[in-house]
Length: 332
Image (cartoon, rainbow, N blue to C red; front, side):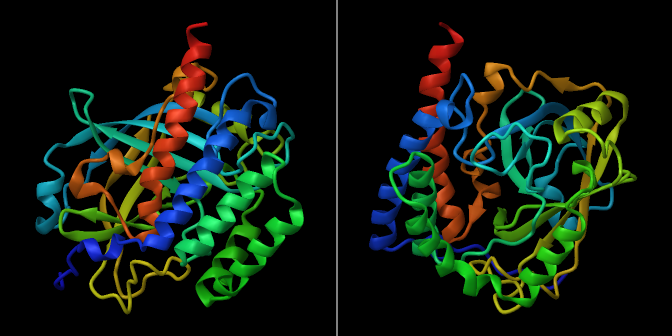
């Protein structure tokens, strides 16, 4: 293995102006979550992204016996317990059969005592269209304000236009085309990605989850939620887990999320397994209180990068607001 590029706090550093925009964004998140029951027409507060829970399931993370020696210290057990949430990326819960094929596969890894090791919110699109923290925060704030009806669609459109240039890369356009071709495929037939970078000790990595032997046409006539529940009630699901390691910023840029890493081979580190009929109640209040904030992970598994850094504050304020509302609902 070549010498990996080591993690440095410089990759996460935000400017004073970016922190100011973050504070404005956090206020818009509180407003959105507080009004989310009416926005989504439900009787609980939702997340401000990936609002719709398809289902929640227990699983296992089985470590590959051939993990490279340099990585073995991070995987000192043969298997770990998982809690997995399947979701749709839309901010609003939709009721119709047709939904945008933007799916979430959020994983919570626990040890044998139930203590959290790491959270990994994975999605079925490997890239992110925005590299600028300021641009992202302004867009995200305008989206939140649009849904709570404080800004017009014209204001939101201006922010959307600003991100178009960063979507015109070979990597991004290629993956948009691939997603379009798979738009009607079964949710468990997609690959899932970390998008941003994560620590693995001093290494910096990206993750990829690839399902095994899943029919992309499964449950084609059903809603996504129904087809997913049907599959997991009656079938085991397995997926291989791979990582890419950052060796140099030219080929594996940490803060340029709209292009794919190159010259870094995928290394298999294990397998995610969900045994059949391991579903939990997706409508239980406890599941809406779940947090998959990757910054709750142990220090040597946490996110890396400026856009990733935003998740720490954003997840916390969203969770705090959701918890305050839903906990009152739970014990009412």
